[in-house]
Image (tube, rainbow, N blue to C red; front, side, top):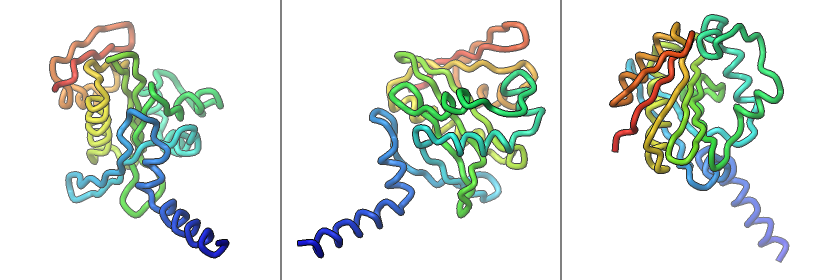
Length: 197
């Protein structure tokens, strides 16, 4: 009996070495749990998988790869580091919070993240891509996958708060979302759009 139990355990341990199984196990109910491999322009291959709830290390690794200009555009202020509470909030994954992380194929260092916070059938979204990997289609791919997950979960309305200086994010939202509406609020723009069926 003991020998049989140890063989079963070995089989389970082997399954837990597979990233798609781990991603599936850690995704909360209601969000897609699949790992995806995408081929972007110029043949760049990116692995996209759900963030594991509470994975502050991945969030911090991505933040550390953002230059000051991107941090200022994303967070609307100079931001040398994230505090512990901010890390916890950004790493939250549950029925309301969903995030996708991008890695270059064959490399486990994260290069981007896209997240959403759901309220009913509406969700606010945001994304960051490491400076050295920007303008390669990673942000667009992550956001497109996040929008597909949102649609699958019954979300019909998307919002985002974007700095007026963040032209790249505004262009991306205009490309990916239909019926987009912009509302000025000081140094920020509120982006609102219906999620296409």
